[in-house]
Image 1 (cartoon, helix red, strand yellow):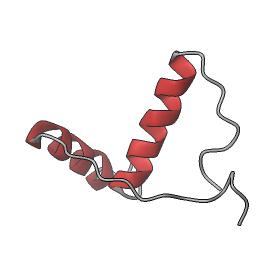
Image 2: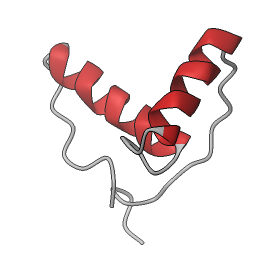
Image 3: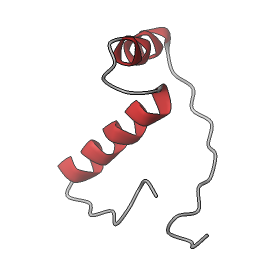
Image 4: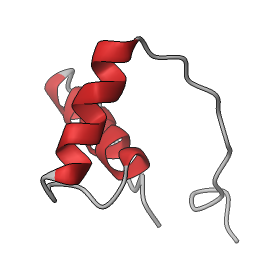
Length: 58
């Protein structure tokens, strides 16, 4: 596995409204799971800030 594709587990603490929002996104089928939604929001945030990230999901 190359350094670009190596994954590292992190811990994230969220308040209840964020957890409920993530659950709703998964329940409605927009995302397969919470981590998928969080990765997408990170990609969107990086793009909005003008940061080019080669590949976040490999």
